[in-house]
Image 1: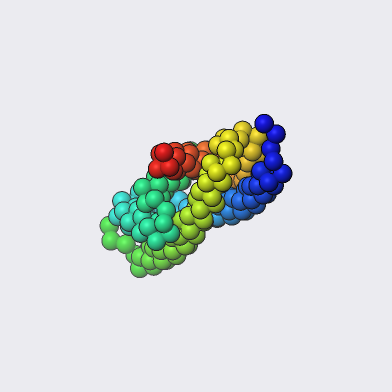
Image 2 (image 1 turned 90 degrees about the horizontal axis):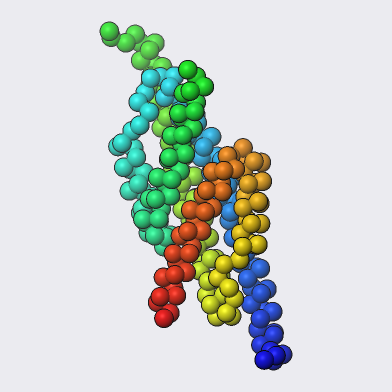
Length: 107
Length: 107
């Protein structure tokens, strides 16, 4: 069945709104990438500092604080706290990979 | 062996720098959480829009563009492009979980 002019207009509106939402998602993603790059710059400095001053690489008390804080922030932002915690674990896994690579290059 | 006053001073400086870096990491993490909350608001709107207008939920061409764009942004930010791609996949998995939950609630 051919679409009525009204249906076609609705579809065009929906398509325009989809493109607008996607443009916002793309903006957010760019911001996420640059923020993550900044975060890794910080963790790389932490890694070098810890290596230089023979501090233990892992700090379970700090990690517990980070998890509790991120869960509270997620709740405030109406984001699933479990997702926030999983995301932090995902990022920390990458941080550890960086530290291991740095240690290998140092050795 | 007891630490010399100089060693102790170096350790105090290192500890202060560690706390400073951690404060920056905490700031970045808060920004990441709020950005992600905003991103999910957009994807939830996309989900509702697609459901309402019977648009296909997945769009492989769009996803390919997103991956290519994020990899380019990651390179520019000196972030591992593979990590950026894995992170996008991780977030999209959560988006799909949201869409599935929304569809269940709608049914």
